[in-house]
Image (cartoon, rainbow, N blue to C red):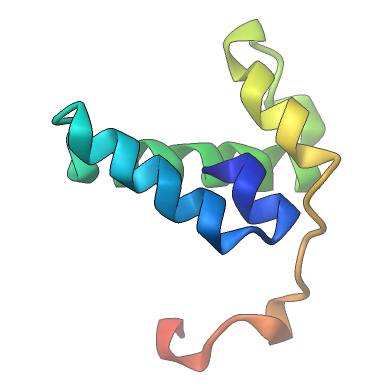
Length: 79
């Protein structure tokens, strides 16, 4: 899903969702995992020394491909 998001390919994202549904995978768990990954990516972008565990490798892989948004770009609904 992340690769399709970075590539700007919504059709690929839908394909991943269809594959998940076909395999009866939990969408709730996938969303939790994505939230965790996005948090790790944000940490890697803003405080790289906080991510030293090799378990964080997916965050490092995505980090270079995702540009951090300025705080002002965050939707005001979250503030």
